[in-house]
Length: 464
Figure: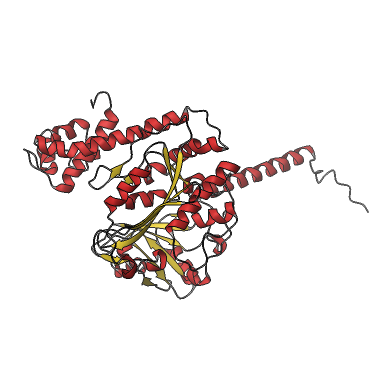
C-alpha cells in the first residue's frame, strides 16, 4: 500500500507494527525503536509511535531485516484488509433499499450495529495476533436474505485471562441448538465463576476440545451468507478470538431515553420487549438460553420493528449497596491502602475495601449511605456520570507504586436510589430547556407589565 495513496491507513498500519516491535523488543540495525529515535529525532523524545510521522515510522521499519519486517507486517496487513472489507461492506449496505421492518430488515439491523458509536471501540479486535480467526466478507450478499445464527459463550478466569473461553452455544432462527461445546481453557484456572457459569472441575473433567476446535466449528457454520447474532457479542467474540464481518448486536439496537451511551442488559430487553423473564431467579447463566433469547429479540424486531428509545427500568438499588462506592479501572499492582489514601483529606468516615483487584474493580464500604455520599462529595475531581447516569469521579492515586495513575469512583445508584438515571448530556439538555422556559415566562411577564403599567403614586386616588 502506497503512503501517498492511503496515508491514514498506511500510518495506522505502521503504528501497529512499531508497537509490536516495542512489545517484542525487536531491534534493527540501529537498535530498538527508542534507540532509533534518540539517533534520528532526539528533539521529539516521545516513544509513542502515534506521535511520529509515517516517514519516521517507515524509516525505522527499514532498519529491520526482511524476515523480521515480513513476520510483523504480514498479519497486520491482513488485519487491515479485513477492516477495509468491513468498511466497504458497510458502504454497500448503506446503498441498499432494504425495508426497516419485516424480513428485509436484517441488513438494516447489521448496518445499525456497524454504525453505532460504540462499535469501533467494541469490535476493533486484535485479530492480527496469533490465535485469531477472521471470517471473510466475500460470501456476504446484501441483496439477499442471510441466514441468522446466534452465539453466546461461557467464560472463566485463568492466570492469563479474566475471560477465558470454556463453552459456547449456537442457536438458529428456529430456536434449535446447532452447536454446543465445552472447551478446555488455556492456562491455569483461577475461578470457574460457578455461580454464573455453572462450571466446576467435575463438569470440565475429560473436556478435550480446544479453542481452535471451536473456531473451526464456527467457520464451518458461517460458510455462505451468514450473519452472527448476540447480545454484547464482542465479549463472546473476544473470548472465542473470532472476527466476523457482519453481526447484529442486540445491545446496540435498543437504547434508553436520556442515556445516550447506555446499552440495555439482555434480561431487561427480554422483559421489556418479550414480556417474560430471561431465567428463574438464582439460576446460573446458560449460554444456550441466552443465545436463544438474543435470536428471539431479533425475530421480534423483524416482526414489530426496532423499538424507539425506551424508558429505563425503575429498579431500586438494594439499601445495603447504597453504603458503598464502586471503584473501577484499578491498576493491577494497586493495594487497598493506595485507595484509602484518597480519603486522608476528607473529614468524613473512612471506608474499608472489598473485592479482588485482579479484575481491576472493587467496593469502598462505609457504615451508612450518608457516609458514602459525603465521602464522594469530598473527593477531589470533576463529577460526571457513567453510562447509566450514576455520578462518578476520575481521581489520581497519591501514593504507592501506582502513584499518578487514574481510577474511577462512582455511586452505586442514581438519584433517588434508582439503578438508572440521566447522563450528563441529557441533564444539560433538561437544564437548558428549563432555562428557556423560565426565560419565556419572564419575557411574558415583562410584556404584560409593559402593556399594563401600574398607576403612579401621584395618580392614585385615596378614598376618604
